[in-house]
Length: 478
Length: 96
Image (cartoon, rainbow over all chains, first blue to last red; front, side, top):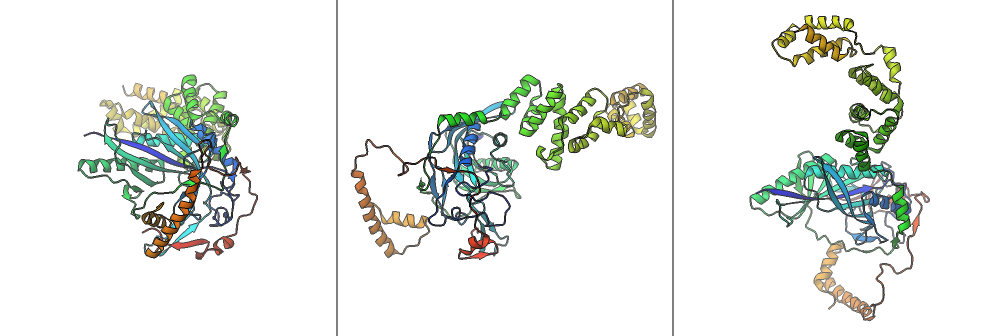
């Protein structure tokens, strides 16, 4: 029997405010434990929480960026559970009247667009951080309440996701949008974006839902994808061997690459929600919604369409350029200076994006990167003044220091050499040094020519025009 | 009866409050009386009254996103707790 997975994601995004959601303690990450705390976030008796207006604003902006409706009347509720990371024994959250509802995100996977519906977006406070000793014999755990009261929004999707790859794309699109509107840096490693997944399987085409499990503890998008793949396989194997799937929470173990049942005692999930009496209702008028909507920047998928339709950029390039707002803006600045958009997009991805990936940096770190000098580099290649090889050698300095590439090329004498007489000698030398390769080529192994051309490129320090070199070899080896 | 012993037991378990059998009996009958008293409210005709989650006529009470009050020091915060170690609050080990 064929099975299909049904996946819904719950994503927590930390809003990047100065102070906490209900008190004026700092939200800074990495402070000395238990120093960003006060009577309000520690839940001492007699205190009064007051909503941070920036949290409300950012939550509305995030909801709008996720195509949600904004509730004209919204409120906070208490969610009760007992765990040492929660000093009040309840978390202030939103239950039946969340700030945003009924939104969607369009994602692209395998060149098809698919709409993932979003059930709701609500505001809540984060819990503290528990530290457990590595030793299983330890009899204590430790609590740091600095994170308690840091503002979060929880974004709940409908079970519209039908593969681990789709889940990955959905998270990317969601993260990009949150970063575009600058409400969060969405750093999964630092915990400013967290994701839990609900997953069940059913016979393909069936309308009924199977028993779901909830997967937690995934700390990268790749981990979400892998955990879902594992869980689908596990659930299918269980059904095929006529076992029952238990509704439970499972933890992803990144080292062993398996999910395991959370062995905590069976507990009723009865949070006994009730309206938070310390906080008054939130009324959001249409004028404010309109104003905030107008304040949002152009979204990545609008840019994506524009790049493809108006600028003729290949899909994959457009997707990668628009993934990061700063990168898209850099590309747009370059495009004002030079209209070979396709070439620009190729070079930005092959040089800048590669550089960022290799050095684990973001474009914010490249303080000296200058559109003018980068465009000048691309132009030099396009005009045949330097080879691609040389451009790649020079690009690091252009990216890191913003140096004018013409200056580097001139100083280091790196102009492309297309003059046959200058290249001719190098070709002869390589033929003398590589008799085996020459024989192979003569015997009909066409592919060897790439190897020979590479040798000449090495000799010329990348300056020889590879086209001329190839032609010379072909002429000589006929 | 407005509340059963079983319900009181369930709520006390959720709240991590350990009750002896005798206490269960006592609190069930006390809670029952309280609930019965409150149920008188049901006699009021609320047909024309709008549902509200809050008793005060206030809305949108917010503050600026600025640090206006100092946080506690680590000593002030952890000093209040029954148990601490270094900068941390200390609790019985929670994971198995």
